[in-house]
Amino acid sequence: MASLVLTFSLLLATFSSPLVEAAYSNGYTLPTASLNPIDSCRRRNPNWASNRQALAHCAVGFGKSTIGGKQGRIYVVTSPSDSPGSPKPGTLRYGVIQPTPLWITFASDMVIVLQRVLMVSSYKTIDGRGARVEIRNGPCIMIHRASHVIIHGISIHDCKKEKGGDGDAITVFQSSHIWIDHCYLSRCQDGLIDVIHSSTAVTISNNYFTQHDKVVLLGHDDSYVDDKKMRVTVAFNYFGPGLIERMPRIRRGYVHVANNWYEKWQMYAIGGSADPIIFSEGNYFVASKNPATKQVTKRMGVGYDFKKWKWSTSKDVFFNGAFFIPSGVAVRPPYKLGESFPVSHGSLVPSLVYSAGPLRCVPGKIC
Image (tube, rainbow, N blue to C red):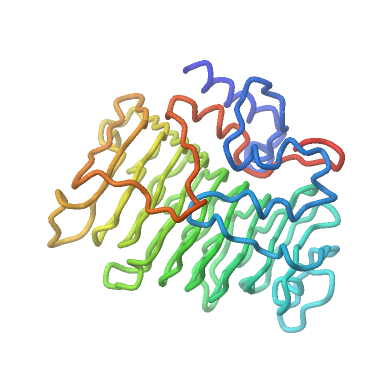
């Protein structure tokens, strides 16, 4: 197992920049690696560029039925500029605000510095395959009262607060059927991904998280009862170096945390308050040397009987003294027909998540 950890570290080190460049996989350089159920759905097809919308068939878990802009035309971003008051055709903002479904792609590599939060409307896919796309150094993305949104294959980092925003990389607010896949997220002023205010039917998968404090928040506030309906799948992600807490933190909802790699969190990995239901399955937990951070779980709040909370672990593996404290009766995710997916034993996770983050995709070649 140590050799797998070393192989993953060496793979990331092959890229020129220690930050964003490391998030881009070079594809099938590990011939013995396994493809997880999402990647096996479409990464073997060298003709991906001629049928981009096939990606919409590949989500798993609670966000399985998310279709994004599958039913719309291809819209190509040709300019990294941003004019919030009067969005111009060819810009990302112009695409995401259109009232009709769109599958949004990028003509070339680009760095987009947004002037205001990017409000993504329903039935949109932001598909970064074939280009290196960064959103950074300004406000970032909000999915607000929308449905069927896919964000795939882009880097979002160093996001800043603005009036009406909170400095998250991606905020999902009162929205449903959301899929965030193969993205790189790091170093924002608040969270990396927040799923709040009764949002549900969300899958967060194949992402590369690094260098951040409050990583993923699921649920707005302990007193916000409507978050009971929240259903989120967190699968095949790499929670890498420099992360402190919230991988994720859950309030009231029901969350399946499956086949993720956790690398030396600094406070806790999975936490919650207000009696959430958590099923941790087949994860790979590597604790740091700090004795105070060996525990994977953290229960928060006042006046609760933590022993009754339904927190289960199955097929997880633990290294460097890491441990998970279960409670309550054993649970499994209440997936609807077609949403469930095979979850491997935690020992296989280094192979399943080796390509987390944006992929290097070239038309005519597998990516």
